[in-house]
Image (cartoon, rainbow, N blue to C red; front, side, top):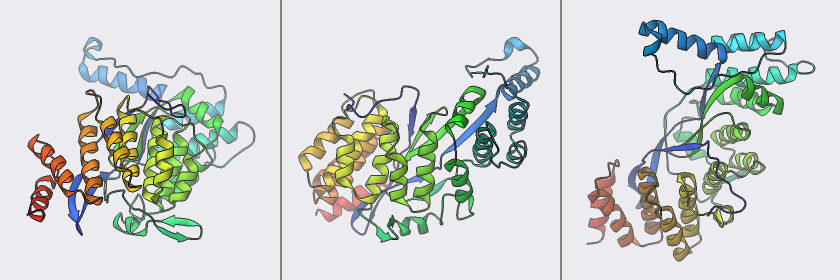
Length: 361
């Protein structure tokens, strides 16, 4: 069952993609095509407008499937709120900022509206950014100015989450000052669909939940190489399972195996997100040379037949990589060869299996 400090959010789902696998300097390395978090923002007017457009295109209202999209029913209480909502409906970031005087803070409720405008403008201006990233298996980092950085990852990723174009700094400023009132306004007046990057190859799907801004802030800090800062953003958040997974991924990059084990203590795999937490626990326990406990964690991740196949494959791949690091090449080969024989389409899998077989002759 889920531990007393970790809860599952039923409205949050996860999407998991397979990594590629390779032998690098004699070590099994998993890597994913990573996507930054992103979001779509719609108002009641924009949703109705899109439905009207679909009806006209279909030629008959009865041929248009209505869908299950929630239409916000809150009524704008002021001219300023109506002006902001009208600007958001245009999906033009510049119009959104201009509707509140350029996004600057003002007195009273204007602070919340300006905060909403900055967030929405940032979300509208952002989108998925695919990039190759190495496996999150760094067992340490450099201490510089009180912050540990993973500079080789930053170099490989092209600088920042947006290829060094300065976009992260702008997004960070807009998310940093997001107020509670802004979140409440957004939830009442907007439909926001968020994709949160939780770990390499893992995206969470949800609406604008209260913890989303903190998770976004953590991602921006991590993209800048500030891993301790990312952890500091996540630590105070309510410990939902998807937040715990995000924190475990950051702690893993820092090499803080003890912290990951403590974070996942008592958390059993009851759904996809907690199965991913069990995998993180298995990797951390392997790093602490607690092989028997690690094996139990990986078994827990694989325990439920309903667990998504991509997560089951991930558990086997992570277990194989962990076994190989501990010098158990035979176990690693057995896991990987079983995946290959089961028809898993994982880039590099056949090559790694052949290399491991040759090394054991």
